Length: 175
Image (cartoon, rainbow, N blue to C red; front, side, top):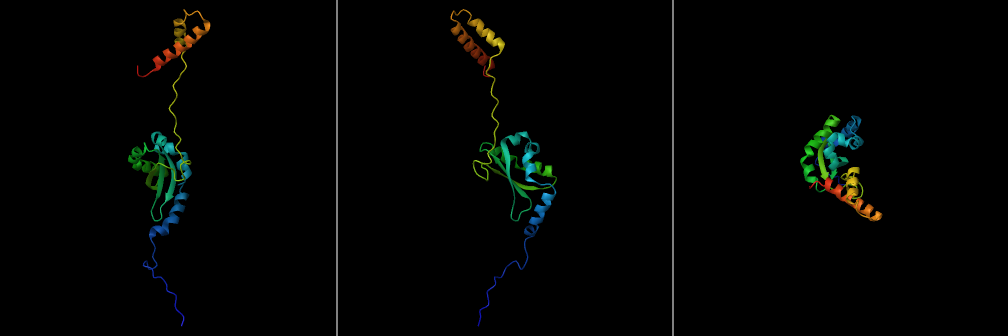
């Protein structure tokens, strides 16, 4: 007598979740309607605004297993994460307004890129460097102060030093 193979009895009775059935169709429809990650990356500053774009960068758009809508992962630094956390709803609304429908359901903030530490870093713009060259008026004033010196090389060195000191004093915001 041959033993019959034991079939596993499922509790779903042949039914599946509607979200699982619709996921591939939703993804195809969203791509057809223009939801492309490249648009989000290339127009990020225009979508969320300059202030937010300076401190955050989109790194990933992922679809959940059974969820409706995508999750946008945004990269930021540790110092900016609390500020960005308070803006999650506004970021989601701005991205969805750009696409014209609810493409993004959730915004996730990370301080490291999903691809690793070296990839996906935020490129921070350094503060503008102050102008270190004294103007002509400051140079003339410093040359007048060193006029009584007999040695030409010492006179020139004192004029340069005096011009730098006068320029720093005039551009120092503390005074």
